Amino acid sequence: MIDFIEGTLCYLDSEYIVVEAGGIGYRLFCPNPYQFVRYEGSKTKLYTHHHVREDAILLYGFATRDERDLFRKLLDVNGIGPKGGLAILAAATPEQLVMAVQQENVTYLTKFPGIGKKTAQRIILDLKDKLVGYTPAAILTVAAGDLTAGGQAVSALNEALDALTALGYSDGELQKIRSALAEKAKEGERVETLIKQGLALLMRG
Image (cartoon, rainbow, N blue to C red):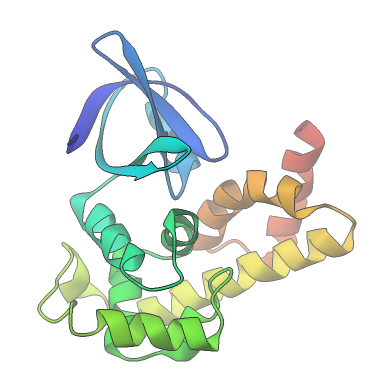
């Protein structure tokens, strides 16, 4: 079992980054690969989750152990796989997600891509007891306003993606830029700005 990888970040893609350690390049699928862009060409450390399925052996990488641990808890929820878990963590911090579950905030959880009301209720039912006493590093300083801000970021991201869909772009094309736009949404960018940035990324290919 690989617990973490420390090495040089060689390059990144819309879904993963590649870290070279000991002469081997490890492809790590991440919630937001673009959050690591500032480390490109330099040393970085990611905490990993090793996932094995019939047709592939995959590594998932996370900036903190809190994020990885929460990803693993999401995988325990019926109906949420690795891709769904990454999508949720791409749109919210561990602190925001934990708070939403503890507050049974279905409205907030349904803002995540692919999460309907039933799945949101299942997340709360399956995780609430498991998160009792679970305190990510910054959870004690998270205020209700931060959860609201997180919900606004998810809403802005979804509105921007809906607008780009209306312009004729496919789900496959939008999936490639979702992580980059999610990072901008977390920084507080407005919907109009996200759409412009999305168009620029799509035109760049």
